[in-house]
Image (cartoon, helix red, strand yellow):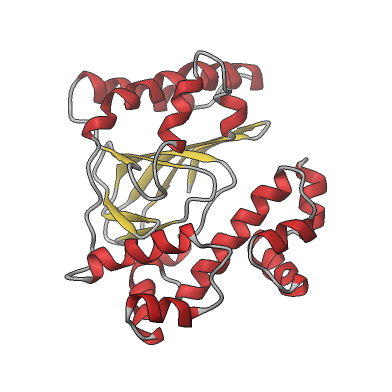
Length: 281
């Protein structure tokens, strides 16, 4: 249930609560924008690019464009959160006083350094106040825009000061699997457009297809190849939003068959590649 939601241009904020959350309602996904997520209550953790981040009241998660994540949530406790979605290049422009804040999203490997857990005290109160000021009803779009552009940089500046003490991910998997999944996903990210099939991953990591799929399913809810395809689709979408043609985006992101790319893209994003490029640019 959404307590509050407001949109302005390509920015959106919301404050939501689910009394009995259903994990199936929160599938593996990524965004074509940056997200700042504030966890208020619940019992769960986020998997981001194969790394698990436990959530506690006051936790803050940052994800950037294309960073794939999956919520694991218990249905026994209400799940409440606030979130701020915004395009990085429009809100934190280069060569401006706030340009340095881009490093929170860009100067790290996917799935690393996503979680901040402010302790009780002045910093935690300040960050909570920033979210409260942004994620509340405003009298007009102009008031909302002013609140967002004033409070979001202040919030991110505070997180920058905490970055050195940001907690490391804690895997919900056990034994060798706890380090294997991030290693596989790091390899996928480095060779996203070159991987030809699961046989390549089987040979490299010495695990069978069924074992790899079991490992991915337990953490991400997807098979290995579904994960690869989703990553490629988001990479292609980024190229489309940058003005590249659908054919070039498909070929550049590892899709040898354009018709297969078209079907997958429309299934995931609900729009054809050409139509989305036309409406978004």
